[in-house]
Image (cartoon, rainbow, N blue to C red; front, side, top):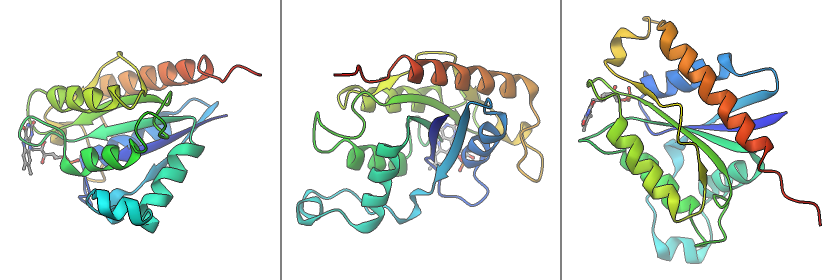
Length: 186
Ligand SMILES: Cc1cc2nc3c(=O)[nH]c(=O)nc-3n(C[C@H](O)[C@H](O)[C@H](O)COP(=O)(O)O)c2cc1C
């Protein structure tokens, strides 16, 4: 079983990105399960706070990422970039530098926005932020959901079949990369 941790970069209760993660959880292949981690309680990154010891929500996030086989990130797009919420979480997770829980972690990125670009620019920023920490980020397929209000019903169920198919393909790729990413036995 591949354990995938889903993280949404939006804290909004009716977030399309969180809804996209929930859709992914329903579309996950039998060999994978997706749990969603809520970033609401994560404080702003501060070196001094980290030096004094992880606040409890940060410790919980780090542990959840460490236990997961792979991550599925859903980013909104704010002013052509990712959200501070998601970047902040990546900054916490990237520590200690070069020896963090992100190192070698398979990561898939997707996103939903109300604009026509469907978070492509935000996704690129997330990808860039994961490079130095050494995560293994899938290049494709791309799941960028434009004009998000047209793709979900009032109960925030995904109604766009093409997006559903792309999410299914992304999950299959993430599971495949995770299976190829097993540590070599000593
Ligand atoms: C501060 C701010 C900036 C935004 N900038 C963009 C943008 O650059 N591109 C875009 O497509 N949508 C932009 N939007 C609209 C968001 O895509 C939209 O609010 C979306 O629903 C946010 O994701 P969520 O539903 O997961 O919260 C912006 C929204 C806010 C609040």
